[in-house]
Amino acid sequence: MGTLVSNISYWEKASLLNGFDFIIVGNGLIGSQIAIKLKKKYSLKKIGLLDRSPFSAGASTRNAGFACFGSITELMSDCKYSSESDVSELAEKRFKGISLLRSEFGDKNIGYKATGAWEIFTSRQEKDYENAFDNIHYYNKLLENVTGEKETYQAHSTSQFGFNDSGNGLLNKAEGQLDTGMLYSTIAKTVSELGIIPLYGLTISSYKENNTGVTIQTSEGYQLHCERLILATNAFTKNLLPSADIVPARGQILITKPFEKVPFKGTFHSESGYIYFRNVGDRILIGGGRNNFIKNEETHSIENSKEVTVFLENYLREFLLPGIPFKIDMQWSGIMAMGKQNKMPMVENISDRVFACVRMGGMGVSLGPVLAVEVCNLVSNS
Ligand SMILES: Cc1cc2nc3c(=O)[nH]c(=O)nc-3n(C[C@H](O)[C@H](O)[C@H](O)COP(=O)(O)OP(=O)(O)OC[C@H]3O[C@@H](n4cnc5c(N)ncnc54)[C@H](O)[C@@H]3O)c2cc1C
Image 1 (cartoon, protein in one colour):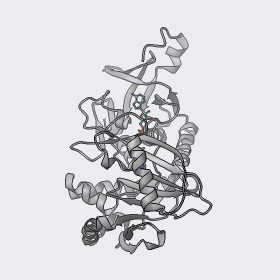
Image 2 (image 1 turned 120 degrees about the horizontal axis):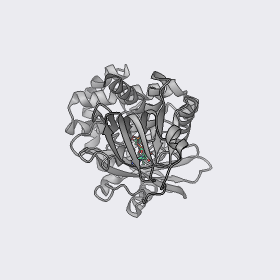
Image 3 (image 1 turned 180 degrees about the horizontal axis):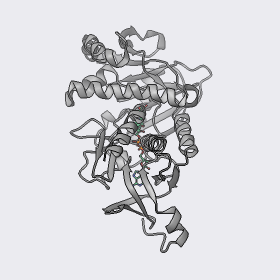
Image 4 (image 1 turned 90 degrees about the vertical axis):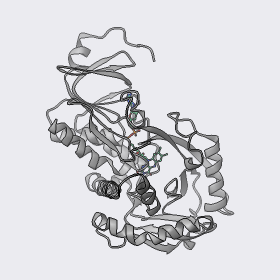
């Protein structure tokens, strides 16, 4: 984007663009919670929260609202790439994060429902089910200290849901669902009440450190100055940190029109978390499926993919709603951040003045509260 501002006023320079102690880039769930934690810790500091969009334009307002920390097949898949201790530490951060979201903001303000979450297996996935079933004891032991439950995962029949071709499921009672819009609005309200300064509609194109702090250049032609800069730009970080191990991953969601009587209620996933579905009131929401189109979906483009739409519609028709007429009301996509080598979130000081909290994977909703504290500690110790 070209420069839109060719000159600035004295007032803008004196009060609006300078004097920031902290600027956080990225008004998603992660950046906004970092801003809140910093303001609560340093109430007199001038803190700005910057985003290119009026609200988040990545994943935080476009996700499925699963309050989850990992199904058995997801954890098994993570264990292929990461150590057992990293996998259980990440599950613990997610589990604690869900508890903190609930206690800090209140269940009714974030639409939290303790539905539990089911992992579903079709008859074609019988081998996967047997493999997961054989590992129940191992993962229950691994997470016993995390959830405080002896049996975080339990095997149950899924016949009550009326899905086609599924009899086997694993229930995680400690997971649930929330209302993504309510969660985001509630956090945004706290940001505003604390006096964090909104810097929305600005795209950071580069930054430079000097003796006095960090100067940020925006595509709109503004320069801002802060003492410390925190990047919470998730999938969009590589322009600013070219060597970061971050791969974009587009996720897509469809939601039906309301049913007179919703065919099933609850929170469900399948295929190591690549497919997920739930009720939203009287509607059914389904998302994912990118594992079938993995290269195409490694993109920053927020367009919907025709192939994924067809795949998800077929999944609804053939498996979830057999013989039940439905109409798709809306569809959208959002962009997640994965790592090629490293699957863990990246929480680092890039220098004494610049910090990054990015690469949230497919379950970033739960990570915000815990990672925000980690960033606060990094900043305090620098
Ligand atoms: C379809 C889908 C479904 C999902 N479902 C779930 C789920 O059910 N449960 C779950 O836990 N997680 C889910 N996730 C993942 C979760 O939404 C993310 O992990 C989480 O929202 C990441 O938050 P964030 O703040 O790090 O990133 P984002 O929400 O992407 O925020 C990054 C922000 O940075 C801004 N930005 C980037 N670059 C710049 C720049 N140069 N200048 C200015 N601003 C910039 C962007 O505009 C954006 O607002 C899902 C994701 C998708 C896409």
